[in-house]
Image 1 (cartoon, helix red, strand yellow):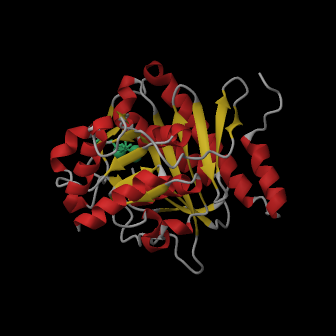
Image 2 (cartoon, protein in one colour):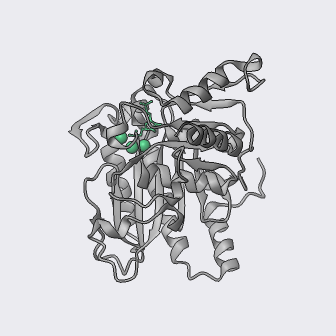
Image 3 (cartoon, helix red, strand yellow):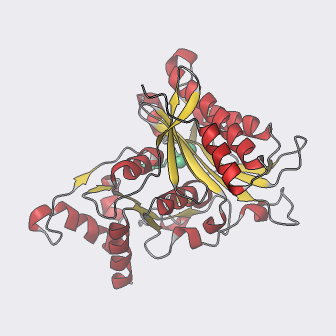
Length: 335
Ligand code: AHG
Ligand code: MN
Ligand code: MN
Ligand code: MN
């Protein structure tokens, strides 16, 4: 066990000293750390704490909420309101944005997916939490959704916690991507994955293949070419993975490359796609770009999308740069 590791808190303090910050951002991440540790504990206790199963309610997305969707949302709301850094919050599990009163003069906005991959909870497969931090625009009213509707390029920071075989936190503040593993025995996140980078090429793709009949021709073409292997136009074999937790898929891509697709399909067309722009696609796109990868709808860079509404959905294609570029090329050839 190496004793030269640094904690996430010390990592942030080093950054703060280097950039001459006031410490308000460091404080804000401290609240995020605490919130994710609490969710990690609840996920980990699982059936022992009666945490599995459905809550008996539906969210604004029309999805059946799991008990842990609701509990994680409550934990995230409560813990992140304590430090007074935020003026408002928005979540997958809440129809409207929520203004934060009382704790202080918050300058930031927090958007989050409290529990990503919640269809995996009851079967003990990895889930996660995704978060995106924006600045409160000058003169904005926090209660208004409009304050949150900023392009992904405006994110100050983004990250996720992965509740997997280890609990990890992966974070970017626009200066690369770093990963921290929770040492359960001391309750601290330690820097274990400095400067995570995504290889430009890969032989692995992730897509829910049960939806193949709904795909558009460019995605069909791409997947067919991968499946054709060595004998096909790509001249190499590809492997396929699908966890059904975006956090787990993105983490795998950050660790060893790959491409993740939840593309536009005929069934999701009316909704604009499956994944949500503000608290799934944007934070993940920011992380992936910061790690040297790319993130697109197939037709537009995700971080450049001008959001129209809080729960907006978009097609998502992200990961190894050369594969995303190829997919974007197939879309433009087709259109
Ligand atoms: P959430 O659990 O937060 O609603 O998100 C689920 C998302 C994402 O994590 C995953 O990539 C995708 O939905 C899985 O979709 P399928 O069930 O269609 O595979
Ligand atoms: Mn959901
Ligand atoms: Mn999600
Ligand atoms: Mn979720």
